[in-house]
Length: 529
Image (cartoon, rainbow, N blue to C red; front, side):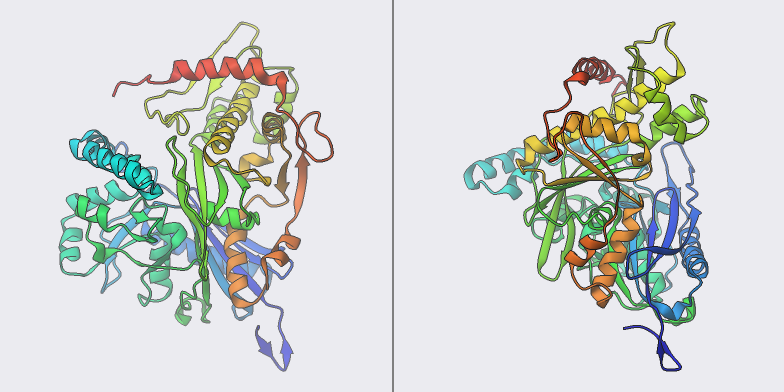
């Protein structure tokens, strides 16, 4: 495969774009998975009202085009040398548009948006929900079907698309009218980009993105007819769900001058999992960016959780479906950015050295819950807090307490995964911007009692989408080949670990961890309902 000119075969490349919450970036990869060119641009969020978080669809589209052209230019290659395009996107951010004209009815409503919070709260407290949960508990008792257990534990969240979509259908009359006329398309960012790239020929998504909306039945592998009926959501507006490595068509030649096959579409956390080559049951990936997302490969069965782990489709390739269980902590990078704005440090790179410059946090505990506490506590009313301050407390103590809190939350999520899934952990890999902090990753390894690997490049979502696109085109042949391309910048071994890299979790931190857990309990249920 590849472009030819004057009888000579040109070197070919895979293009991959990741549309994140704060940045759109594009990388050009060669056969050795080296980044040959890159380009990025910022995503500018819009805040039209308190609690509303939006993005301009046209700005996302223009940013996408800009980074693709910029990365190809940076690589010093021509568009015709691109074998395939892979796309990774943030999850749960959606818009609706006119099927005929392609014009959006409204801005993208972000996964961070809280406009439907009251709606979510009233539904979770409703008699209807209590009745459904009760019936499903009885059904599970009689049948022992995991699907019934999952339904009995269902709790709606603003992070899922469901109630933000209901809000849009209620408040934007043109959306409801278009849906009634069969002229409305719903889509997360990946679906919108596919529609634009193919000039309206393709209205589709993949299983990883669909399963992250909250409207998809991961057991039946289809949009949930039950939820759609319960909440009066028109099934006609939803995109077709395809395999993650599906041939989604080609970009219209008017956009980049040539047609580029779109060979993978993937949700960002699942793409990062694939980029880390976490292909086997028990493989764990921890992405530490704006928030922390911890995923474990659970194989061909979705995990049913009673404590806040969320089952998502990792990817579907051919007939193979791989599921992940996911836990998250929302305020990882947010806490570090907050500390920087308070001028506790000027450069994020200083923070690891600052933490190591003191022997402990001097009894200071930081609870990173600006957005409440997620699994295993699941308390949206928790507050962020600093406790144990003394006249002797220095900036270094404060920075150490903040970094410790990130590792402590990692430990809570890790222990929850071990307890709930009962799956032996095979390997642990970290990525995301915060993973560049040696103190955080080393303390995480110490608390887990397991070795933790950090890749040379932290942007795994781009690489995961590229890997899948490349496999589809024969650019790379097998997953074993991908594993050989994987590079590890540093392996963090827990203190006292033998060469095998596993040992009992560090006892040195038990008193500090207990103090922090006490601070966390005091931060819970802080805000009034």
